[in-house]
Image (cartoon, rainbow, N blue to C red; front, side, top):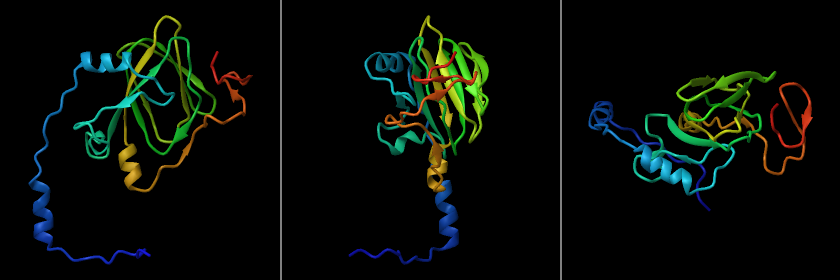
Length: 179
């Protein structure tokens, strides 16, 4: 049986400080052509399609200290279910238009290409895409930071939820869609 407690070690402070200066961050670029091609060829989950990675690995998804960038697609005319969690989002609308529903009352915020939307931690949020085209969102978040802090708390519906969603107008809906 493995030990539960790891016995800590002591490390020279000067060497500890010096190791921070040895890392030189490198620039990373993602082309829109590559992102668009990937979007065209994969399934789009309700919370995201893929995450940008510096090296193609999960660890490389933390592209800035404590931060990641996800690409989320809300199909034309579709919506996401309201949810809230311990990490914040900074959404950038890459293309399309739609509505964000924010807070417990579902306050509507219209979104268009190039708009930005900051959703703080624990602010309930959901999206609805206009019928003309998919709403493509880039979402920077501090999920990696919150993970390291042991704070993955969330109020998110699961695929097995059979409780009707409530629209911002207060009417129960069976699809989780918004007006």
